Amino acid sequence: MDEFEKIEKLRARANVTYEEAKAALAEANGDLLDAMIVLEKEGKVAKPEQQVHSTEYTREPGYEMVPVGDGKDCGESFGTKFKEIVKKVIDYLSNNHMKVSHHDEQVIDLPLWTAVLILVLGWWFVFVLIVISLFFDWNYKFYGKNNLQGANNVMDKAKETAEQVKEEFHHNSSES
Image 1: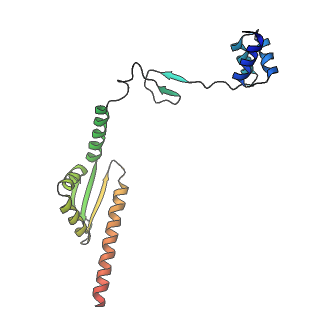
Image 2: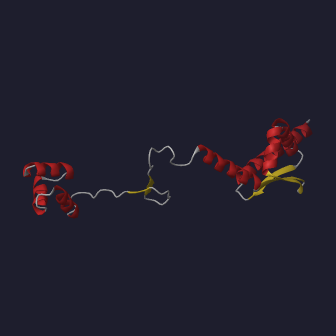
Image 3: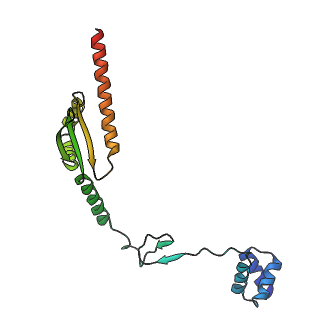
């Protein structure tokens, strides 16, 4: 490759002027790679991004998971992921409770897994029972290891709605 071809190639790769490419090649004694390094040091070419690859699994930023071999055995299998999900669900249901109280006196305290099992087995009956019980000053609260404030907010809103319906019913019946 003659000098003109090298200059043109360097200009195309480095996006520099003819004069800059010629000066960098002269400083690098005609070596294209060394000329690119010269241009990088002068700040005329952006340095390539550094990438780090590893065959070991890590969550550190800057590392990327690279499959080894054909990639079929790389990562977690469906069975492993399913087991982890089941383990988390069991942990969640075991470490949280539902408390049922009537007139601020605790009546029932169930692990959440028991409450869910009862709900699944007789959802239609349990749902109707909960709605009716809200009209008779029964309260449902959830507590435990996890943040259950969302469930408590829903139950508080249901209780408020039941109270509003009761007040409206009493108001309408007293007017009649």
